[in-house]
Image 1 (cartoon, rainbow, N blue to C red):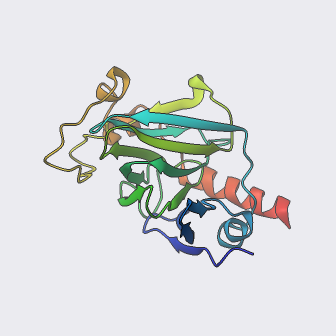
Image 2 (image 1 turned 135 degrees about the horizontal axis):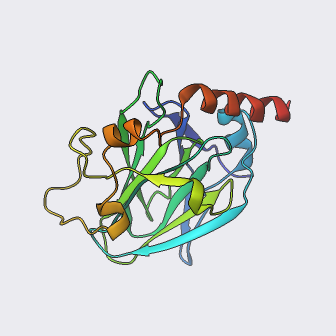
Length: 206
């Protein structure tokens, strides 16, 4: 039986950090970055996995801030399989007590911490090393019509990207609206819709 997974809810509600035990030996190491028992105990329902994503990024690559229409939204459980990155959760849910707040968590292939973001939360990261590999377990499949973004360089968000690394963004992320512009365009999820969706998931599990 695996040792205890340590769980911490972030300052942005409905996002959690999972720290698994790592077992190194002369052959290498073993780790279980996702463990359903610990996940259900923290979140209150199982993680439905509809799609697994894998990204490889050079140093400085920034992906995000991405989010999806909720419901159904797209919850994500992510971990860094190789390299190191700064993972960012942004509360883009209009009406949330923490709307506009973010939290930054370092994920790497030393500790293999996982991060869960419930539906409706924004997600971004910056690769700190070349060949940084991110693995995503996603609750829904890719639906481009329902997926949106906010620029990760929005001054109002104030995400503390490292000053000594030049951000490398896709054209889509570079031209994404600010949080305020996305709110005015009615692109952002609504907090009450998100929390009602979370409650339906929990009720379905009981």
